[in-house]
Amino acid sequence: MSSTNIDSIVHEACNAAGLPVHGFVTKNTIAANFYLFSQKAYTAYRLSEAGGIVMALLPYNPDPDLEPPSSLEQGPYMKVGAFAAYNHYAVLLRLLKNTAEKLAAVFSVSKKSFALAVNSRLPEKPLAVLAGLGRIGRSSLLINRHYGPACVIGAIVLPGQIEIQNMEKPDTKDYCKDCMRCVNACPSHAIEKGGFVKEKCLQFWASIAGNLPKELKNVWGNMLYGCDECTKACPFSSRLLKNRGGPSLFGFAPPAAILEEKEKRPGRWISAPWLVTASEEAIKLALKKTALGMSWISVQAMKRSALICTELHSGQFDRKTRKA
Ligand code: B12
Ligand code: SF4
Ligand code: SF4
Image (tube, rainbow, N blue to C red):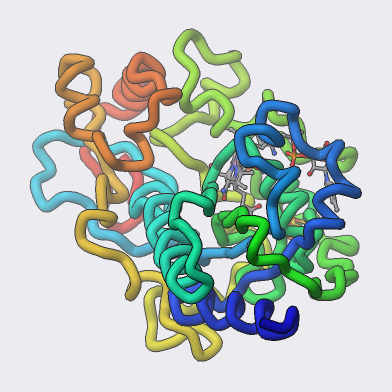
């Protein structure tokens, strides 16, 4: 099989799986950028033997208009970030798996020789940049020309038999210029002129138990897990916002259309009093197989955030403002 054929078969498999926005990192580029990988990741993903890496993006609407639960008895409600309300990591993993299975069949290689990664130990943003999928914006997120920052990133590490030959040209567009929208939108001032300060980002604390720094507690509001403010504010997310699950996205299926029912959990709103009173086991069970059910997300951190929310709001949830 000629090398050009290999590249076009991989492109086709990604498109057919519903991942039209993807790019490649070749074997040589992996080797030239070995410093990006931790030793652990380099070994675990068998990068020294890989034929290349496919990087793919899955878009999401950063401000989905998902109804709060119909019963208001258990308000105030806490907000789950858009990528997690519907489990976009699980969806992307499923689409990457479909792509790998197709390639395994075409090239007659074992399915096990592919490694799939979403929110992994791989440096996903730098790899997406190398694959020509965009540039890192002031918010520190990858900005893609179709999806802006409103996308999650995944990877398929290809076996040595499937050796990618060509890469897209790097994206050289200066997206941010003098725009400061994410800087102004960030409730906790985590995005500064000099860059992003992760310890000031609300999402950094969402999974860590213990007291919050005072400045962050004051602006925490009703957030549970996932903050959408910098993504929502970015002008390059606006096409997705206009497309709220609408008919099509640049000719591709709208993000909401490819979700399976089981991936539409836990939804956008979770009762704060329930989080405060339920046992750790009950919460783990209810959130199992959702983006909030990951081992590194502390249930005690969620309980702490729920206490802040209930202390802050004693009234009912306002359907119009979506605030408790
Ligand atoms: C830890 C982590 C966090 C931490 C810290 C984030 C941070 N920016 O440092 C916290 C909890 C705060 C966080 C928050 C969020 N995260 Co997060 N997070 C991660 C995770 C798991 C690891 C990132 C990391 O720390 N890497 C190690 C550091 C050293 O690398 P780095 O951040 O990439 O920074 C280096 C490079 O960017 C490099 N670099 C910059 N440009 C270029 C260009 C080239 C060519 C090269 C070679 C290198 C390079 O310089 C930096 C310094 O070394 C990644 C998944 C992953 N494996 O990448 C998701 C990930 C970055 N997160 C993601 C998301 C969606 C979010 C949130 C929007 C979630 C939410 N709704 O709350 C917020 C956004 C906050 C923000 N403004 O960044 C997405 C980003 C998608 C995108 N479009 O960019 C990722 C990629 C997960 C995924 N698979 O989709 N996150
Ligand atoms: S995720 Fe929220 S808190 Fe974190 S940088 Fe973005 S706007 Fe700020
Ligand atoms: S909001 Fe503006 S400054 Fe922030 S990442 Fe988007 S384009 Fe860049």
